[in-house]
Length: 409
Image (tube, rainbow, N blue to C red):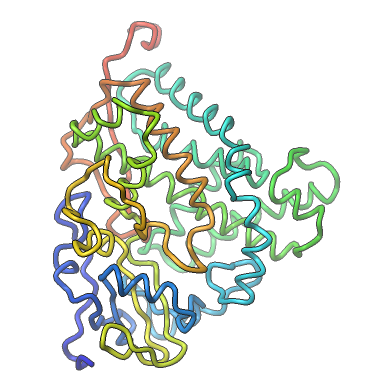
């Protein structure tokens, strides 16, 4: 086991917008990490090590046991246990109960039912871009609204309230926000859901088959559970997909050969999406586990109570698992990547996210085949301090057809 003084803080500076931190990639598959609150824990970077930890029930996701590797957490600001409904920070059997209730709403059949809506929302966003004309911020005009509409439809939250969700989730995922700002963002989402639940119970809510309406009808969960659960699903079902849409577009705009391969066979874009998920891996440093007992991994003992950061972007560039890992290859069979995690906590919405990415990216480049960056790539601001990596803005332009130009131009 390594001595405490050898532990270093987590490296977060990226050499390019698409590559993991260089110093983090130089680390051993499992090494000591110094946390901001004084905790001495670990960081895992190896594919095999991370996959083993994710599958091991001796590691917990309970938030009161986890230490934050970056940000301004102090020892006296330790998180409290997750309230009812916040299932990502629960271990089995509590976690299992929620997953079982939710699984059918995110399974392949439900996603297939949502596919026409995904296509419609994508077309509406592209129409709005064309009507407004170039240039545009692709984050605001395309990457953010599509997942917001889709997750709101799945839950049954009226689409006109999506601006509340967008603003609040951005605050929640910013590691430099104050605890007060985070609490305010959480309460704004919970307030939106509670108002919807009240309308549903009064018989005046949406008449569709949204998840919240179904849960109210079955009575499986309390209003407190539903409000918290809805908050989690809106946050996790919106920002990660938005970030992947924007960052995926960004990297394809800088890799014309890969973009051309995607455009040449849009019906076979499944492997391309998997490769983008592997190559970009936007969950930076918020996938964490804490040992519930002493566990030996990779020849080292992770002691009870020690937190491990699972560096998914580095694991998905592990040359022992992916040949030429730093090359973006949209024809690569990138199955087995860890972008959605692994084990019992593997992302519940992965089928939905994959479908949104396939539909939206294909439609974007079909509609605007000459889409290009409107600024130098170095001028695109990235979210290096956010748990979910991405870009704040993505200025793009294209050669607008006369019908695309607003009156007066």
